[in-house]
Length: 311
Image 1 (cartoon, rainbow, N blue to C red):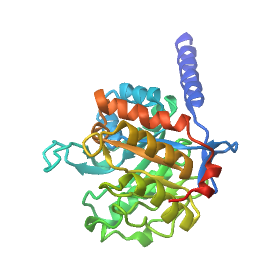
Image 2: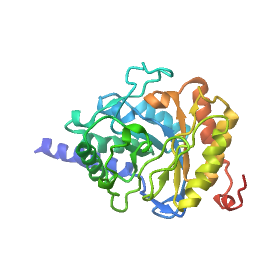
Image 3: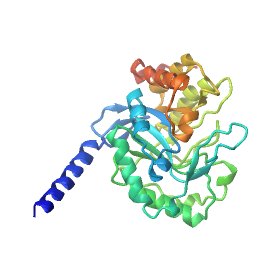
Image 4: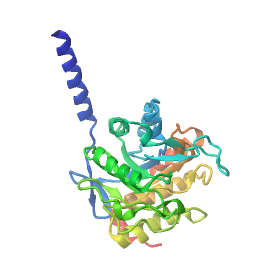
């Protein structure tokens, strides 16, 4: 009897801890996001492609979640189905991402919900990218999308993205007409395009955009994300893959300025990094760049200035 009571108390405490960790659901407010209570919410996002894979492989992701939250990020961009340079042998960059095949894990959806709960416990939302180009049948891809939509329906800290770079050659056979928008109140994007190209249209609740690289990448991230996507289609846009730090750009000033512009003009931009691709801790200059990205958000002007923005 005492043992049964003890077990009941343990279960009750576990449920209370999950309830306390729940984050407010996000909603669309014009070209921005807000909490359900109406407070504007800006995505301060970081690439963490391999984080779910690490969790499902029983690695302790607590140090990573703690670091991202302590630096000041509130959204992580995470892949759900991928096999991209898992061994770090992929010229020219040789930068590892990882491997996660949902069908190899019978408890994938249960583990996914627990992963979201753990992220919420650290105050973190997750942008979950479902299709990333791993070869599979059309039926399997549709079933995966449907399974993720169903499994995450009650999670308040998840934003879904159907496909990463929908116009890549490996996505040409995707049966887009079979992928349906999740029912409200879920937030979901149909997917980003390749660098500088349009997102998959028409948008669902919001759009995701990749601005491209090169010397004009900063202007593309802020101006093009706002003018060619958010303004044009009247939806929030997440610029969820900017240039990669620190190998493609190591400027602290540019990290600060781009993040500041994004916080003012769009729903949010992602700090894309070498360590983030494989979901490792940031160190040294990479960590300093991440801190500048976050510092810009605390000093940005009102989004009302977006109406007066000029190139």
